[in-house]
Length: 323
Ligand SMILES: NC(=O)CC[C@H](N)C(=O)O
Image (cartoon, rainbow, N blue to C red; front, side, top):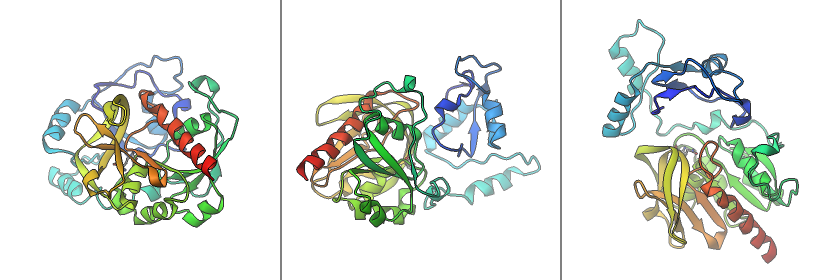
C-alpha cells in the first residue's frame, strides 16, 4: 500500500469481494492502533492472522515506491525466517516469475453455481432491474469479484457462475443472452485454454470482458498482450471514451495490457487510459463484443463506469430483438 496509514476503518464482511481472501501478503507503512468505522467487525491484523496471510508494517513503503517508479515492477520476498541471508533471499526472488504462470486455476470456483445476491439493498445504489431476472448470463470465474455479479443482478440478470475450464459448448447449450469473462490474476498468455473458450463463444452471443476477461478477448481476436512497466493499481485512474469524449475516473488493478496495434481491423479502442495512453477498452460491434481493462464494478472505487453494465444490457437486448 502506498497510503501510509492503513487499517483505521477495520474490516467488514459485507465488503468481501470473493469467497476467500487470496492475498499472498500485505506490506504497509503504519498500522492504525485503533479502528473507527460503524461497519467495522474486525481489525485488519486479526483478519489476516485468521486467514494465515502474512502482513508486515513499519516498512518504508515510500522508498519501495520510489524504487519501483524507477525500475518498474520487481519481485519481492516476504519471509519470517531470520536465519536467511540477503543472498538467499535474493536468490528466492530471482527464482520466481509471474510471467507464464497460470494463477487463475488457483482461484476459480470448482463447480458451477447460481449467483444469489445476499447483499442488503441499502448497498445497491442503482437497482433498475433487481428481482426481474430478464437476462440469462453465464459468468466465467477467472477470479471473479462479487460486485460484478451484484451489478449485473441489479440490472436484471440471472447469473450462473462457471469455472474457468467450463467448456464453451456447455455454455452455449444453456442458450444465455450474454456471457461475461471476469477479472483474474496473472499473465493472460499463460492460460491458452481460456483464450480457446473465449474464441468458441465469440460471435455466438454478446460478451463482456472485464480486466483479465478483456485481455483474453484481445488475444482471442488475434491481438497481443504484454506486461507493462508499471501496472495500474488504485481508485483514481482517468480514462477517456473517444466515442463521446467522456472521461471516467476508474478503479484499476492490472499488470498486463492489450497492444491495440496488434488487433485486426474492425476492433475499436473505446477507452484510453489518460495517464499512459494504454488501451482501456475495446468493442467489436459486428460480433457484439465489449470489454474494459478496468473495474466498472468499482468496489472499492468511483462509480463513474457503472454505465458499462447498462451498455452490456443494451447489447443483449438489441441481440434479443434482432433474433
Ligand atoms: N484485475 C485483473 O483482472 C488483472 C488482469 C491481469 N491478470 C493483469 O494483471 O493484468
